[in-house]
Image 1 (cartoon, one colour):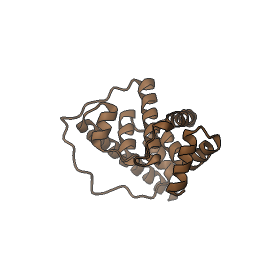
Image 2 (cartoon, helix red, strand yellow; image 1 turned 180 degrees about the horizontal axis):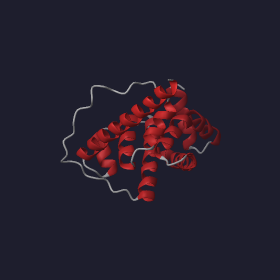
Image 3 (tube, rainbow, N blue to C red; image 1 turned 45 degrees about the horizontal axis):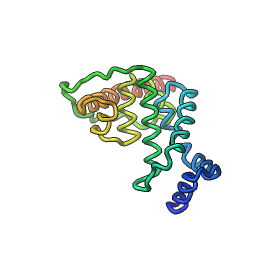
Image 4 (cartoon, one colour; image 1 turned 90 degrees about the horizontal axis):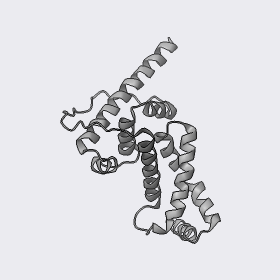
Length: 185
């Protein structure tokens, strides 16, 4: 969808045009639902948050000022809603690892011979505080400073949680690789 037709659709949505809302929904559903899947505990929760997120988007669409990406604006709403739900549900205490030494990433990266579903499942099984930072940094491309502000943690904690998430993912994916190789023998 080109930027001119998207701008027209957004303006129509701001006028409560249901057809335009449907087009926006159809166009952006895949990317926004994938955000919900990464944060929710199960598929049904992801669907609920996804639907609630679109209600928020259409209720707040008049606040979009055409400064920056519309998709980015919608992603931010979805991410914030997911984080809000997680915090309410789990009342998550974030550990402060600011004083820990954060080591460089291992040179031996995990091979990329896993399908998306295996990776998604491995990410989903991370402890909540690691999963949130990993999702925000890797998938949503927020900086550690932005993550720290969103989650009310220190930048050091964000970096540490990301490092720990990556290490846990490497371990899990290496285990999957070993199991797969053993099954092929």
